[in-house]
Length: 143
Ligand code: HEC
Image (cartoon, rainbow, N blue to C red):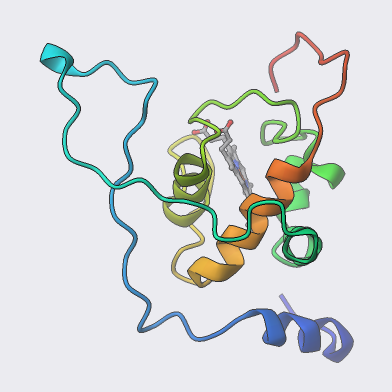
């Protein structure tokens, strides 16, 4: 994807090199069934930008720049990929769960972005998605 210089400048400001970033730990999925009632050891990731409007605005820009909207639709309302704005999550809506969806990808068509986006940028995307208010009348059709 060729970026116009004007579009690339803010993008570069949002990104830092990801090569030396530590890999995030496994996260616990609370909706999973734990054999014997005992969850395996796992980390709990917390969004460092929770409620940060600037981070949400940056995340919205990244959502367009990295073509998330090409699959999830403008405003993340769903297109060939599922809606990320209806408050319903296939893989969980907790901070670490949404982070993992973006960082490692998901099997039915969600690319892994952890190799090209540093964790900070992914947290900004998470912040943007978490800032979207589900509509009152959410469609019963699953996207
Ligand atoms: C090539 C199309 C495509 C692109 C590009 C894409 N996604 Fe996805 N995404 C999908 C599909 C399809 C799924 C459903 C995967 C599944 O069910 O296994 C998904 C799932 C997700 C989920 C999990 C949703 C849930 O209900 O738990 C999140 C979060 C997400 N995408 C965020 C993003 C973000 C942020 C970007 C941009 C950085 C992005 N996606 C780019 C296709 C895409």
